[in-house]
Amino acid sequence: MRGLLSVSLLLLALLLATAAGKHRHHRKGHNKHDKAAGLECSTDTEYGKCVPESEDCGPGLREATCEDRIEKIHCSIPCNWKKDISDCKYKFGEWGPCDPETLTKSRSGTFKKAFFNAQCQDTVKVSKPCATKPKKTKVPQEKTQ
Image 1 (cartoon, rainbow, N blue to C red):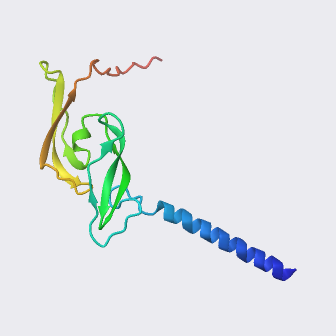
Image 2: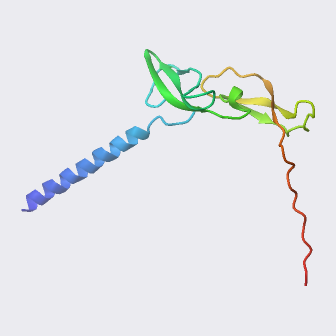
Image 3: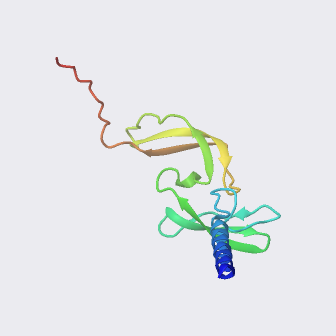
């Protein structure tokens, strides 16, 4: 009876170890910018542009080429002024004043980091529509005693 219990416990431990190993393997390679999911190469992985599933922004897929394998990995293009520079990281200054003729405001940024081997500009200038409503400022209330 003890032998059967020992074998059962051993099989249970083996089953749990196998399940935990599969879970760890599933998460492997999910680093957002460094590796394609599941691709391990002796050479650098080459990434294509992110192609949104619908319209011109939102979730999509990009090709990751590693040696002779090509896999599709998930990506996302922001649905705002950042969509043209989504694979590049920039340090931006403050937004400028609203231009009354175009009703847009702009700011410039200097290059910091490229993701997915992207070709990035040293400096960029971006613009977005001005707020339609002015921001409310809080007026401090006087304390009453």
